[in-house]
Image: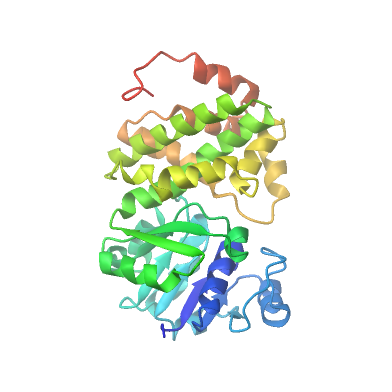
Length: 337
């Protein structure tokens, strides 16, 4: 029997993973900031705010007391959106068991520091955690995991033994986990695909067809891989679940929050109005800011990300984007941008 698990973050993804663990007979607690979420899980056996319609295991408990929950947790799963990791964990950093298993499922890059989740935790909690942390990522909508649709993801850590422990922790008949030591690529793939997914939504909102979408996804993975390799990642990882797999899902799936943002942008709606109507966080909006800065800092051209940034933050008319991408200087496919 595995040690008790604590999932920090009561959104849809945190709830789905907490329910998966509880369903395996693992004593699991989920921490949520919203008291309404805590109450609904404990009394109605459902996260009526972020994952409605998915029944939760009786063994799953919810709490609003993060410090109290951390006191006995040796397996921790972080599901807090990237931009809120620092503020959530800084007050309780000293309570985290560095010898335990720590897994992060957040997908993004912090705007102020240009750091990925494992880098944020290494700074906030300690360098030892940065060497041991596991990133779990891949093509996985929370609702489909909650409904037990067959899903495959990848666990990445510099400590491969911890990646293998994470495999065993989460593996079920419907949730398959692969392992790698390439945490750099896995985290970057999970973050950068959200930016391309916004572009995919813009394509949909502009009512372009399959040709356009196929071109966008293919050139999107080229952009992601270029930046990832420049930052120390393995190009082959981007062809796997946490790269191409997650990109295809997020660009084409109707449950994608980032794609949904792009659809509304393509229809001409302003970003503030779109975000004001959303219950959950679309990580790609903030990540777009960070990606453009990060790419510039290492001299990598990312024309798709730059165009998404222009639409969101500079008020660019999305109808101008396709033409500007198409009429750039012609390139060879392997080396070109």
